[in-house]
Length: 81
Image 1 (cartoon, rainbow, N blue to C red):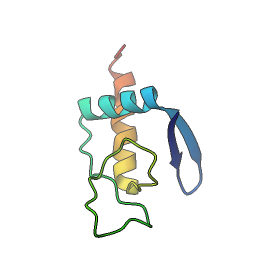
Image 2 (image 1 turned 30 degrees about the horizontal axis):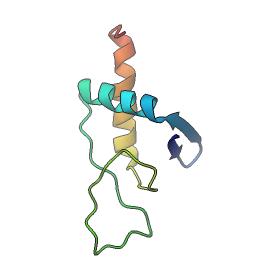
Image 3 (image 1 turned 90 degrees about the horizontal axis):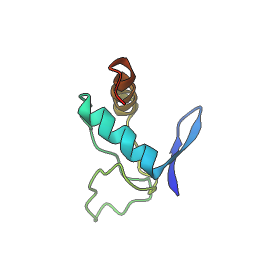
Image 4 (image 1 turned 60 degrees about the vertical axis):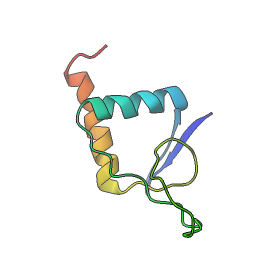
């Protein structure tokens, strides 16, 4: 089980442990999450919590995704092991 990340040009499968690691590293290196957007079929009467964990077809804004990727990749520049 894991996360299916779908972009305009690419798709990527990430295992849950690796996804959790990417989120933690991005946060540790300064990523400020904007929160996810609900899927298109979300009942707007229900509250959306903006979570990043789960395969609920939630959407991430391009700027937020770039920030996550940039910050998570920064750890390589700092020799994190």
